Length: 316
Length: 292
Image (cartoon, rainbow over all chains, first blue to last red; front, top):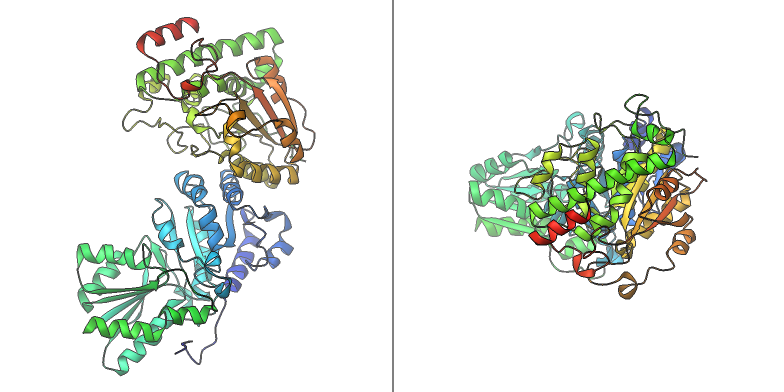
């Protein structure tokens, strides 16, 4: 049953994240990194070595970490807050709301190792609620790159964006899904990765490569599935979603997170208003049992088999 | 440590330098005049709004007056100047005191105070930096100001600019753990451009702080986190001025200002029920008479 998008190498997006950030920091002294004892786990040892003064490690103190980032932005810096996503978003949620989003400080919140990347460490260390929590906060944009090229492009975008935003930086290895590395990511744009007219699979983050694998299986069975990579969860590319609903007549969403309030809920809110079509929302339900990330993704049907089954059910 | 003091804003004749040049008695008189006017403004604004946190507003007034009229290097004509001193009111519920101070200092029109908490007013019950010049952070939930202040002080050091950061805290709010995360970080880093001012009125919304969740010995707690900490009479304007303008000694400073909640209005002073009670018309008249 395991599904690992066969025959293609996998990448940890933290590496692309760190390389891009370091390269940008060389020519932009406003860039600082803010950590909660997470220098290594954010893959920022190289940043610390090259820019020791601009690595603000506040220790294991997430509330202070996010408030400090707001203060740094007040002082003219561009803070990249790099911390394990469950602790950044869960522990410091009120700071994200009040200090960053409501105060509207242009801080880049980087949720590292999100979803179920920490596998057998268990639900305390999983960040499956983050998209749901953060979507509810006004003024905060949410970006979920699907591969290293998108990650690099999103980091470059974030430096100049001058708005509060959250980047979900994957640790679970994924193959490259970007067709054109020179145009890997545009803020607010959903990318059409595969044409199809029978239904649309709307995926984000590490699920995008699995959606593409599912589309291949479906094609072999005579179902032409469109695949949309939604790398900006908020603001959502509503035009792409509406077009998909109208042109393909059905939508399956798939995300590495809870189904209450994440990508699926965002897509459903657009679909139900503008172009009601049958939908299936795939994600995580309940706290995960013990297992590594690959096992857990399979456990929750977050693989090509699960997506294919949902698509076939949808097509009746 | 902490860089050079920032250049004075608004040309040579800033209020802070003017104050520094005055004899003590004259400085004290000017600050007292401003404090009296701001207390009257607070009572009037809360009367018009029918809401507000009058007890804490009146206890923090002398602190804000001393800072805005005697200490802060700020320019109402250029409120986001990159070299400005940063004042963060962490006890954001005392917005009437902040707005009244900002108005008297020229950041906002004084007539705007009458819109306090009215529908669609810029003057929300808690301050919004995007709507009110002179506000640095949208505070309100307690325990948020000091971490932001630590970030501001780190930014001052990294940038080589010399601005000071002052964070005004309630005492009850020190029960929020985020303050101590920030205190630990500031002490560790020796952020001597950072001053925390605790409005130590010994009352929180529901009871006395020491009955609710004890804070004493408060100076010892800050000292244990690597801060220079001392107490002053929070209603002695010259003592506050001296505390806020002492030489830096390589560590962050905590000024514990012993205050009286409701200071200046006899029937409000040191009474827990006046945390956010609104005075009746008769009580407003009496309060304004006492503050004349």
